[in-house]
Each structure stands twice: as C-alpha cells, then as structure tokens.
Image (cartoon, rainbow, N blue to C red; front, side):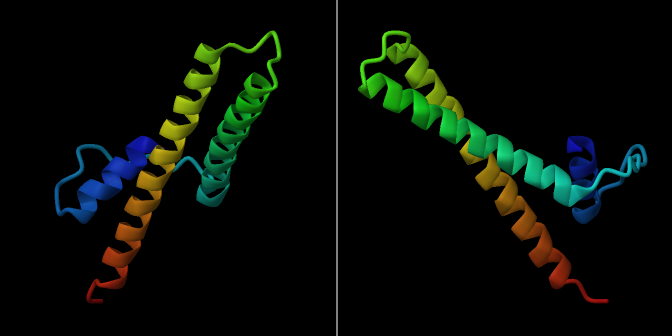
Amino acid sequence: MLGELRAGAQVAAGKAVSAPAKVSGVDFAQELKSAIDQVNQAQQQAQQMTQDFSADKPDTNLQDVMIDLQKANLSFQQMVQVRNKLVSAYQDIMNMNL
C-alpha cells in the first residue's frame, strides 16, 4: 500500500513512475478503517496501562507504561500525517483543471 501511495505522489508531482503500481484489489476504505482501529487499540491499551499503574497493580511497571504511551503517541501522530496527506491530495485533485 505504501508503494502505491508513493507512486501516486510521484504521478501527482509530475515525475515518471519507474514501475506500474500493482492493483491488488484491496479496499482502501477497509485498510484505512483497519489502521484507525489499530491506533485506537494502542490508545486504549496505553490508557489501561496508565490506570493499572495508578491503581498500583503489581504486574505494571513505569517503563512499560511509558513505552505504551509513546507507542500510542507515535501511532496517533502517524495517523494525523496520513490524514494531512489525504486532505492535501484531495485538494490537489479538486483544483485540477479538467
């Protein structure tokens, strides 16, 4: 999927694409929903770990909580960047002269 996005970005920038992108028949909406669900799951897991640590559960340590929080933060930031690229691509398409 990342290769297809890069090829699409090259086409949008007016650059030649070295190899044609394969059409795999993957539903874009389903892939996007899956990615959002993974980010949501990471956020929920980090929140649960934080609550467990606050409740002084014996099997939860600070290092694991901090790692989960950072993973959740990074996945969220990545999703925001993907959203920004999608909005930018949509705006570029809408501004094209047909």
